[in-house]
Image (cartoon, rainbow, N blue to C red; front, side):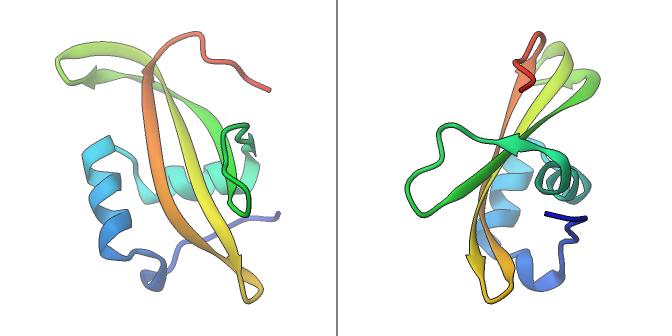
Length: 96
């Protein structure tokens, strides 16, 4: 997949809530979908991409050097529909 760009139509209330809850930005979603590797835990009919970002910040009161972002989506009429996003904070994440 080439360079993916989020549009306002992609930012439905569920996705916005998960982004805020999990500390994920629109730019991180775009980069993960564009250059990430396949998520091994995606359910049948759903695709997922994973990417590890340098973080060097604090999340929930603890300092973390990295953030792993996973984006789940389905194909939809020549584009994709973002279903949800998750993040893990820490270090030493697998990079496939």
